[in-house]
Image (cartoon, rainbow, N blue to C red):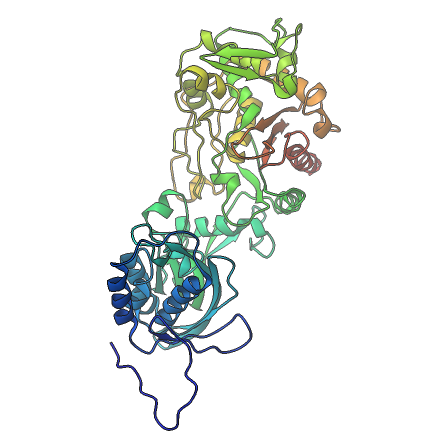
Length: 557
């Protein structure tokens, strides 16, 4: 703890003293560099002592409380005083670990923190520093922010601590490390031998990170020196890969060839920009090769790792089960009532529609919910789960495509939740990769696990389905899906494609979301694709044009 400086010489106007801190403001309005001149801990102790004699303060934070907390934290961090900075956070231990590691493990020095303009209790700031390791230095700059909250126990304003305060790409449990990278860099190639870069394909940042993590050590490269985010257990469980922030010296990359088509990948990148929060995957059913993957948002890879209710596209799997159990055939008469009651729930169709007289194929093509839910009394709770796992390879958590994926989930459910799962709601969760695989399985009659890098590259074991649908069931599925593509909810999007194509639309309701997620999955020849537009509305209008555009292009190649 340093001694408080004494003013020497003639008296001058003193700067404002806030909570034992002298704030020195530099630059324009709303921005400043801050330095502590001792007294921080003593001031906290005095405040704590006096607080014992006061009622606990509640209510919104004042501007002074937010600013004082922010400036104390930023000044302490800038001066390397991790303990002082941690004292104004709600998780001192985690803060000390990261700020100590910031200089010790990440080798970051000459830190300058500049506060931005506060918005309520949120305080943005910018970071400028230098990463220095074994005689090599590189500049580091980025923006971050934090929120100040009131501690319930005593009303004290504290910084709401998360690892993202230190660096916005970090999640709680992650660390910052500078040194020789654990994995050498890779040079990823498309199926034609062209280099894959984020400049060409903005969606593929997370894919390239995943490829490096999986193949970096075996692809023949040599590690460089870099500052990177090393993922903790929680981030790894969520499928996140280590992320390079600054490259101090280049390594020698190894080469990894993927199955991506440069033409289709470029088209997929363009198509997802037509909708907000859109994702799409295209693959080859006969082999499982992934030909394109794109997301309009370039952070989390929803196309491969998303976990979303698939809505009525799940009716493909449900229909497979119904056909195999001989509970229905495409042309059998099967009305779709306006409402259906199951285990205390009343299920409705979209727009409260109904089909009083018509075939099951008509209900499939119109995506009429209650024509599926009314089979629930004839089913066991585990039937849909078994069908998804045994025929479609879903929900087994064993796909090995070359980068992290979520392989779908169809949990065993009962009562109304089981009924909801038949139409892709309840606990059922999928992503475009899963649903492209579903259409692929219908197209060929058997499951071929999707993959981005050939299994022969590393001799990994790819997932298998325990059984294959019968030729009769496949024929029935193609019948209802081709009808949907020609005359049903998918007809508008699929217009101009071959009559041998099949498709299914979906709209998945999400709590707290005004519009449903729009889904679309389809196959044409030896091509299959699926997409989702979150909060977009009906799948035929949103995801449908994206998927259909790729199928049309693929058919012309």
